[in-house]
Length: 181
Image (cartoon, rainbow, N blue to C red; front, side, top):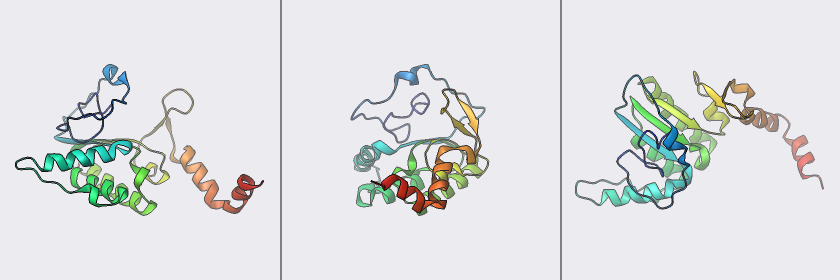
């Protein structure tokens, strides 16, 4: 969806133009997105290509008039969150592919706050996640492909919620079962 909307396959804004490895699906050629209102800004955050986008951001920062936030000088999680905080604002269109990958539970809550702040200002998000924290964002529509077809799902019915809840409520029993030799 992000590529069909004009974003670089590895992530960044629509102005990012680079490729280190073409790993995206050609499905993007068959997808057409429609919105009632055109977004003034947007960003594609893809967990597996954070390093490449951070590197490109530093290169773009060296160009005349450029500015870099030096994401590589931070940990992966802190750099990823800083990338969000510096690029997300209201009235935008955002695509996030497993944004929780580098984030601790505390930082997932920080990301949830950033998403909610932007949502309240009119931003729209498409998020692929396994995080029960991010899935818990109020007023979200959760879609799943789990049974072979796209369908709506309640928060408590997601595998992420059920497995996390089961583990937290029965940790010793589950670990004994899993680790029993």
